[in-house]
Amino acid sequence: MNIDGMKCSRCRKPAQHRLPSHNARFCDRCLGMFIRRQVEKAIKEFDMLQPGQKVLVAVSGGKDSLALWQVLLELGYRAEGLHLGLELGDGKFGEASLEASQAMAQRLGAKLHLFNMAQMAGHSVQQIAWANKRAFCSVCGTLKRYYLNKACLDLGFEVLATGHHLDDEAARLLGNLVRRHQHYLDSQWPTLSGAPGAFAKKIKPLCRLRAAEIKSYAKSQGWEVAKGECPRSKGATLPYYTEAVRLLEERMPGTSLNFYMGYLEDKGGPPPQPDLTQRCSVCGMPSYAQQCTICRFLENTRRRELGKSGASQD
Ligand code: AMP
Ligand code: ZN
Image 1 (cartoon, helix red, strand yellow):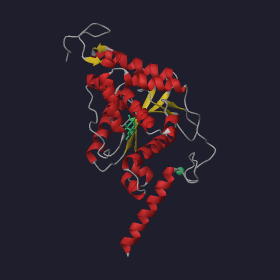
Image 2: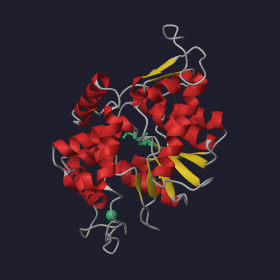
Image 3: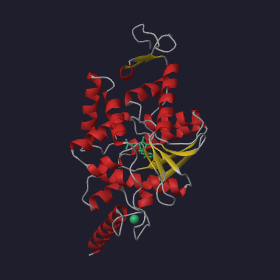
Image 4: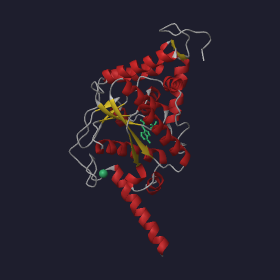
């Protein structure tokens, strides 16, 4: 649909997309070029990938990771997908996520690796959250990071790309600044270097793009994407910061890119490598404590589950 008879800022054909943050309007074709250029720019600026490099894309089935996968292939990277089944207690959200990921794999003719987090952990997120008396979302996030990394290493990939975009990163930055979470501020960077056998290199090539820009792109491509919020995300605080960033962006277009990139510029460079000398006595992953967070989570869950089955036998 043409917007108010406006012309594309690049080719002067009828424009379908308005990008206030860049004071631009694009037709479908030029929006695609803009998206690819922003991804290329982020890849170069933050030393994410070498030309043609192999990369594993964490594909949730949402518009962001689907767009990322397609764009990385278009830019000539050898990108395969990794979908982690989460079993969040709402079959529909999980099913739609898997279906959208598989449909994209087929469209791209690319390989999608399927893993299941509950199988890898031996317990569901709900069981682990209950046993450890932790909020569902934070446990899910911690487990996801650990098992996405593990799956990536097990598949022999050195680089893992996620679909985090500018709204995600700016909201996270604002939240960390407001709460003065220095530890998280220290580690916020679009590329985190890897360490053989411990960490895959983590990259966020969509970090220059706004959610609305990726949404327009997904729409212009006519994709079926997994819609809706995670059924378990109620109570998370990040959406408040996301809303705040969106409001600022609406009133002052371009604010989130300036805020996020300006912060990174002041910071000057990526965080130092984490200490790799101390390892978890159970799984062997780097850990400051004798047991890493995940292995402690799992041990507490096993204990609780054993206790429950013991009690029910009495
Ligand atoms: P989220 O934390 O849900 O906003 O997701 C951020 C990014 O993490 C997504 O764009 C994906 O790259 C990745 N991701 C989230 N959930 C999954 C999943 N179930 N399987 C694979 N990748 C995921
Ligand atoms: Zn461990």
